Length: 469
Image (cartoon, rainbow, N blue to C red; front, top):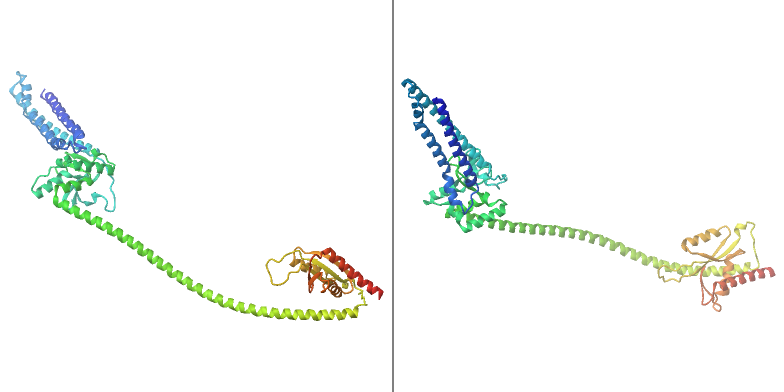
């Protein structure tokens, strides 16, 4: 009977403790986590003490359950039992009370641990950066798996490993002890400028305002308090400690000064690098110019030599032209003499390939550039039957549009015939053509048809003269 009654009481005490603990968890979720600036003071005062209230309630329940005379009342209902049975039931009741107290204490601790885990799970997580860009690198000792101690300037602060948030409550308490005054964190959150700072940090980090600060009231005293984002802790510390504010001002001024100096140094280095590069390019260009000057000097020497050689060749060419004119005159004289001797002689070789041919060709081209020499439109080829095609092809290579105006075959002597033609139509009195060697031009209104007719007449006249003789 007492055992059954004790179980009912244990169940009642357990349910009371469980409801109180659940109430603690729900209030922690709704009031402790993500407290913001305007409601900070009320929530802090409440949440900082909520664990103590829960603890005291659990202790009260257990103490009441241990001191209640309920067990004695229940056992006294059986008045017919012996005194021995009463003493036995009282001993059993005391043993059950001790067991229940141990069980409830373990359960209370378990619920508080679960409450702490739920709080930490709802805390925003921020991945750690590297290369000195994360506040968590100031940690020097772990408190547990969730918290560490760090050195923030000369202050020792509690840092949450999950996101780098810093316990601002402990920091303000340490600064207050140093200054001999009390710095209440709620006053910083109530400041209008602080609200603007919180809003700016939220915009910069893309973290909601309610997640920039939250209260942890579970666990040991070393980790309890209000945790804020590391970008807010500098402003809170400067507000709490004038000395720290001066140091921060000095650090910021030195940072901007160093940054600007590095920027100017970078610009100066860039200018120096460009100057060095330009100097190098200039030296390279000077080197190239010197080489080109040397090449140009050598080219000028060669050009002067070529000019001298050209002048010498022009002089020699003039001399050769004079010699050629004299030679042509001598040839004409010899031809005249030969013509006189052979006037009445027509020699026909036995081999027809040796028969003389006189071919008059028209060039049909104009000179590509101006020249000091007279350009002649017609050319006279004096050859034999065997070399006829060679003579024509030779001129065609020079004049692509070459045409044959007239061809006289079976000429006793083509040289003599051309000489006679020139004497007839190129003399001073009857200058129908302007001839120079084997080249000639038509003069005035003298046409090709008239030329062909006159040449035929001269050729026929010579044959007639030979036949008469």
